[in-house]
Image (cartoon, rainbow, N blue to C red):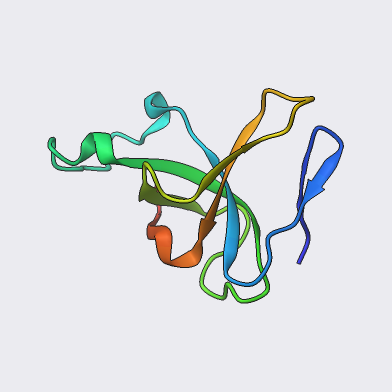
Length: 96
């Protein structure tokens, strides 16, 4: 699978990991309804790259995941941040 370039370095997820670019909370579509008490516990993002064992998702998919899931990765030469998640951490695919 192809990796995701960050500051000139390619981050390639392995096995059942994927790389997600989190979206700002203001980018949530108005049609997505999350119970008020749960709203602070989830985030949305765009899948940037997937490991070889990820079969249901592909780059470009918009997804919902737990706010604290996975690992935040930021390379020293860049302020760009991504999340590295296991496939099981993704709650849903968003179609909007």
